[in-house]
Image 1 (cartoon, rainbow, N blue to C red):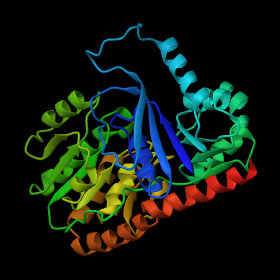
Image 2 (tube, rainbow, N blue to C red):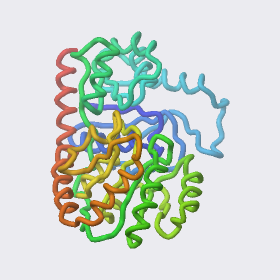
Image 3 (cartoon, rainbow, N blue to C red):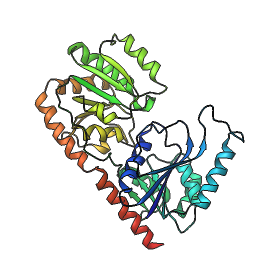
Image 4 (cartoon, rainbow, N blue to C red):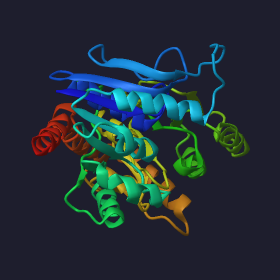
Length: 358
């Protein structure tokens, strides 16, 4: 079976890109798999790509690369239209609603067309009009599936399959470092300001513990200023972006996830795969969708006094090594259900089932 994944940019530092590359690598063990990036934005992808996975792009927008025609939305749409009309795959999986709408409009009907969704739809009109032409929609969580069923009024074609972790073996935390880790894009949705304020309380009571924050993004300067204003220059370290977040999590004894929403959950799952317990807020569509509180994690209620409550949850784990180790064991159990071979098996079952109907 020939499988094509179509993404806006396979070169960016995003959790959805990481998830697609993980799945593509596992499926490539038994199928011909390619990842098509609409845009190429850098020399090499930020995340590693399996040598078994073919990579190509439609538009090279790297700085300094000459172009015969001016860049623009029309040029992008023409390149995408040409690629879809000429595609000769058995299965096409599109990441992002804009690409899925184009797949529904232009990809050959004999190809099984699947929309991979992580977020709730923002512009519902084109989705309601064109998504019925697709063979399936796959959400990353049960609540996501429910939202897409309500939008499309079609329970049979909407499925829930979580994202796959990278192929093992995974790095394993020894749980002996006095380090709290957090990682991801530095954007408002991730709410790292809540974590920094809470860690100021932790550092005051347990000054031998450190917070390492991995990632980059528009919130970087503001978060650094906040840490400096709180006098945390010796306690909070901005480590920059890394393509091996799991390897860094394995150096920690606690992973903090302060997100307001976590529709993808790759950061959560990578932490669990390292055997590190998680402290997270119990937000709507938040990390709770991917966790088993009390077995692999601790959840903190949002609202009044949330900063103090989050700090108290961190301190409780800092002071209780036995509980940290017990949650770490549960974390590994949770991660086993997201192993790449397990998730790829569910995708293969869906793809073969859809192909048998065409």
